[in-house]
Image (cartoon, rainbow, N blue to C red; front, side, top):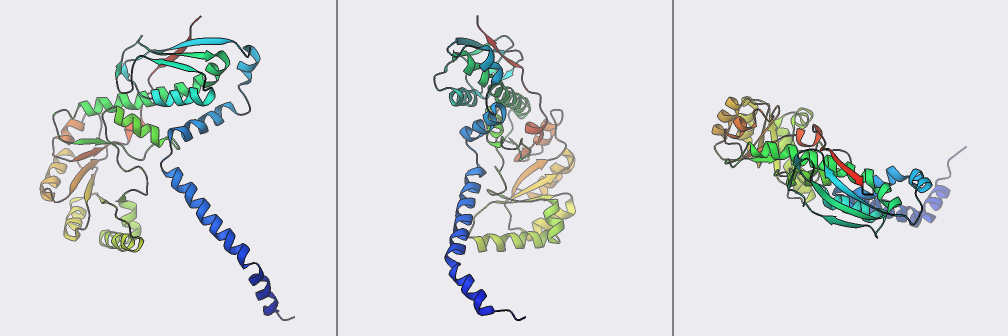
Length: 317
């Protein structure tokens, strides 16, 4: 039995508008969603967190507390540290119940001590209880990040080196975790995969070498009409010398170099490019790394290895 190509052509042609519409809808709609997702707003993050926690209702509070009952609570610090997350907590309470009122005594980025009263919150008791855990989750984690960042940033006092975070963040919480780093005295590295080129070891290996990776990057940026800073990671002096020979980059990340080797590498680079130290850097050795003259030090532990600050929201009877 032969294939009726004329029939197939007529069917396809008659549906070409539908196909075209689907393609346009898919690409436009999907790309808009991706663009918005790249840098999530506080409102989006809070809405997701509340949806995850509340589901179809806070049934414990709905069951035990009269609908019209009013309440008041106070946020108390149970640890010393740097406060972060007030604006996020406000959005949590607002999202749950716009009628909730908050009286803040200590602002984001300020030091707090055990026993400090940070804010009063008042409104429907059901609403306060529904918002409590989500607000505390944000406040405790963000304050933990800010506190640890401040400890590391203090070690750089008097030096020009800037402390950077990384992309090692909690999924869908990057916006607020990077905000916490800033509140602790650190700086934000690239926000995602889209706002900077960072050629790391796996890129180099898959590309077939440093030269291939750098040249392919420039070809890509030219083709896409994009202007992005280019950073490349090196793991040895051999790779460093190869990068310096090729050039065409903005920053060199020196990964897992000892302070002594880092100092030597920075002398070789001689201010031709920005320098960034990374890998095995901790509170105990960050000063030694900064004293080498590195422009930046990136520490993934700022957002993925931390202790949340202990804060408690207590009802006022």
